[in-house]
Image 1 (cartoon, one colour):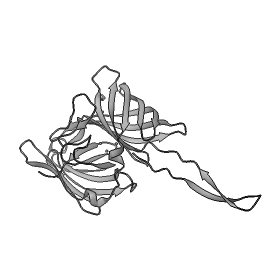
Image 2 (cartoon, rainbow, N blue to C red):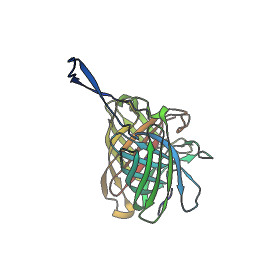
Image 3 (cartoon, one colour):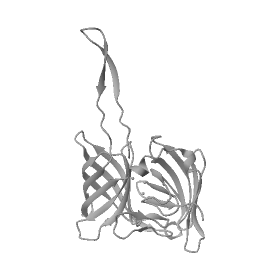
Image 4 (cartoon, rainbow, N blue to C red):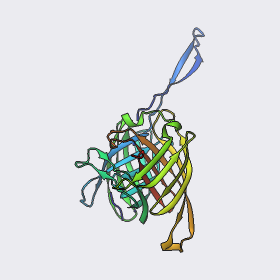
Amino acid sequence: MKFAAPHFPILALALGVTACSSQIDSISTPVVATSTLSPGGIYLGQDNSDSGKAATTVIALVNENQDLELYASNGSYLLSGLYSTTTTNGFSAQARDFQLESSSSSSSSSSGGSSSSSSGGSSSSGGTISTVNLVGSYAAQSQILASYTNTNGVSGSYNLSYQAALYQIPSTLATLAGTWVVQDAFGAIIDSFSINSSGSISGTTATPQCSYSGQASIIDLRYNIYGLTLTESCISTATNGGSQSSVTLNGLATLLPASSVLSNSQSELILAGASTSEGRLFILSPPS
């Protein structure tokens, strides 16, 4: 989906049990409370624009706290916002829509759109930021179907399929620990991030020239989506004479296993986050 502006569940069914006294024989009888499964998960799907353009492969990270990060696999845009549901499996979301410009090696989607892999890269917002509204329905642990309209007049629909094998991986901060990079076609490292076993993040990018510090956090130990906060400090010679600018980005992260439906032969760390004025998407791999 390219408008005129990131991170994709088996959920455990919890049964609440309380005891009540039987009026007949005083035997405690359990009362089972119902539970509604959320649409939380990692999703792979299609953005079908009403403009007649070819469908775009997209990946969605949907956590249990109503956060949504949805991005095009080619790195062209990022939606960052919040979703809500109804008791009848209705789904709606409102998000900022960032048009992204590739600032290093670019991502690519497979032909046919049934799967997606990336060559690694990072993208930053450089175009118009608008607002998009999604309205539709979800089937827990299955799919999200939603139509969208953009404040710039663009409309279309998403058909997202739940990726159980990716979301059901337990999350631990130690799993994220290590060095994660973007390398150019000649193997030179142009973006580099380090994460320690406590989830503390530091990193740098070459274009634009930025430094990062932040934190990854556990949202739900059962699932492979993490909370993400990054403080970005950049030197921008084009707009402010080389002065330093700083912004805090909030979003989601996930670690995709090697050779999965959404990664290449190496594992990939996805960092997707935004502020009110900027969206950032990083697709990182271990250095080769």
